[in-house]
Length: 225
Image (cartoon, rainbow, N blue to C red):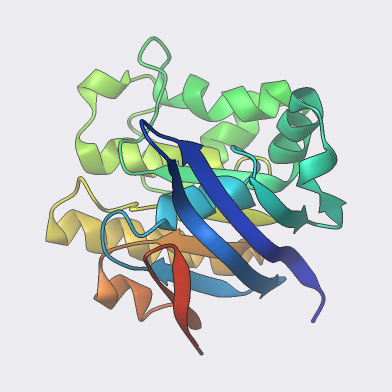
């Protein structure tokens, strides 16, 4: 299978008070198209930093990240934004919905940015798939945490991304709601044939993916399929 993501010798450091703080060190990681993968590790191990580099939200200090054949290090901010809009979906722990927009309008945003025809029809269909056909015109504050995360799921799949990054997608949800959201996530992912990269503390969730990468102290310590 061809690779959707290639990470080669990637390190990430931040200037700190006395010396540089190295968060990731010489990471090598290749992910095949259509694969499902979990990145696990203790807090502060570099999981979310790695996710941000892979998704083009941040830049590596050294090494290269290649997403769908494009080397991210060489892109301008505008080019990175376009690559993300065309290729990448995101799900975050804290939902990141726009509070002044309804559920329907939140899902329409990426479709409108991409200039897609009939964004309202596509957004409505996606919200129906995640069981929110009765909540289209509700604002985020009128929705429960589980409902908000389902809106963000619908939004993540709106542009039919090639790769989906989910950062602790059930971190703010109770066990029962988490199970519903995760089942929906894997269902939608399978239907769309999207590559799924999950960052999670939850080993039960990680075990549902085909491959688990463990990170500790900014280094990959194991990679199991």
